[in-house]
Every structure is written in C-alpha cells, then in structure tokens.
Length: 128
Image 1 (cartoon, rainbow, N blue to C red):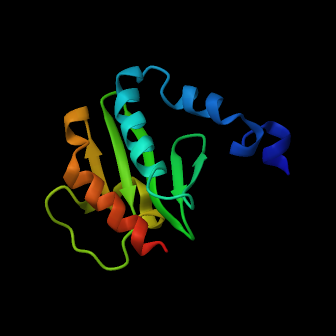
Image 2 (spheres, rainbow, N blue to C red):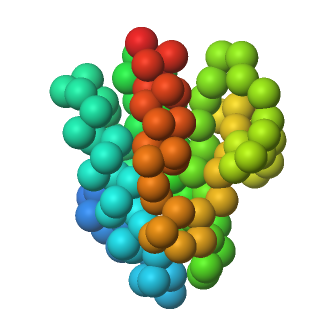
C-alpha cells in the first residue's frame, strides 16, 4: 500500500511511461529492445509482457525472460532454464539473482540473431 501511495510500484505507471523511463539516456538500445520484444511476443498467445521500473518481464506460466537496459551500451537479457550449463553467450545470472538462471549481454543489434532466438524459445518452452 505504501508503494502505491508513493507511486513506487510498477502498477502505478503506464507501460509506455515505464519503457520510456527505462530507455531515457539509453535510446541507442531501443532497436535491440524492440527486436527482442517483437520476437518474444510472437512466440505464442500465452506470452505476457509486464514492464516494471527497471526491466520488462516476459511470462508464460512462470517468468522465462527479463530484458533490462543495464547500462547506456548494454541490455542484459535474463533467461530462466531448469537445468542448463553456462557456456558461450550464457553467463551466470549476475544482477538478476534468482529471477533468472542465466544472462546474456547484448550490446549490438547484430547479436539479436538466430542463436539468441533459439535460447529464448528454449526458455519459453521450459516455462510451460
């Protein structure tokens, strides 16, 4: 209730406003976010997008992806896998803690590729 009163919760803000604030001063990352969001939302009708203050959560029965503009030059894509090792682009969850099991750092639109889409789809399928 206190968060609502101070408008410190995500529910007190419009989704577009939350996104605009996330990318304020980080506008060069918007094309990366848009490509990720477009792919994730087209996976299936059961994908729910939930913008928060600092990130956007994507859920099915449970959260499977989290997109956060962490710096002016990097988006951190958090993915939740049940039992997957760390290799290649897949790093430990880092800043996401237990919200995600893995993190992928994306600094350029060219990194939003088939390999990344396959990892996102794998996380989505495990969330069902």
